[in-house]
Length: 138
Length: 116
Image (cartoon, rainbow over all chains, first blue to last red; front, side):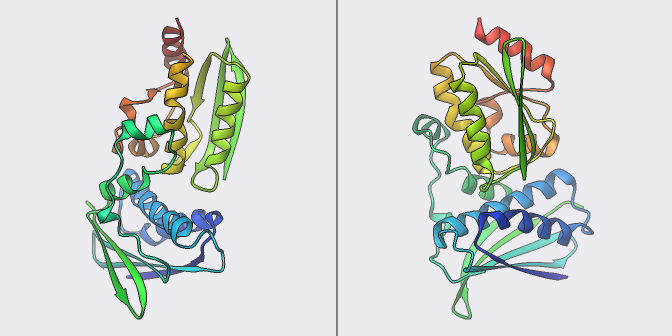
């Protein structure tokens, strides 16, 4: 199965992204807590891109693709043409530092890395593709 | 997206967070806690019974108040989280940094103990 959703880079559209992910996976037998974690990871990746690569410009588009090549195997791709920020090279700040600096950011990448099995970046058709994969227990 | 209600009980400000908190709505949580602190409440309880979803933007709001509230000796206790919401806190290990209880009674008791 495969699903696609195109969305403008407005934070008001994050709810739509979450609904798209939930609806696409609703027949896959994913348990509720795991489903919520997956939805969260996609929300975090998309909001990061919207804010940092597209400055929340609603005219800029993200494409979100979901591929389910086999039962329990989930592949998500977020495609855009903004600047690339590879989270694999990002050293998350220690929680103690975040508290001390009263920073409200810096937690999202930690969540994505904890939830997803793999995050990789590639170029396809002159666009950036961020591919996240996750095997779920069903 | 998110609806926030504040009620006062026994000297505590109870902030009920209903709906979903993401990067577009976390500011409302931030404002509610800031108001509570600004109005001089000595105990803050966050009612998460109606909270369906929280992303890192919302978690970051709670984190950003930890030090200020500690310095001012104002306990902030969260309660009533659904499992899917609690899981988000535990993935990051925030359950150890924030005060989180099952229900309002336990939250009030802890807040009273901490504010002595």
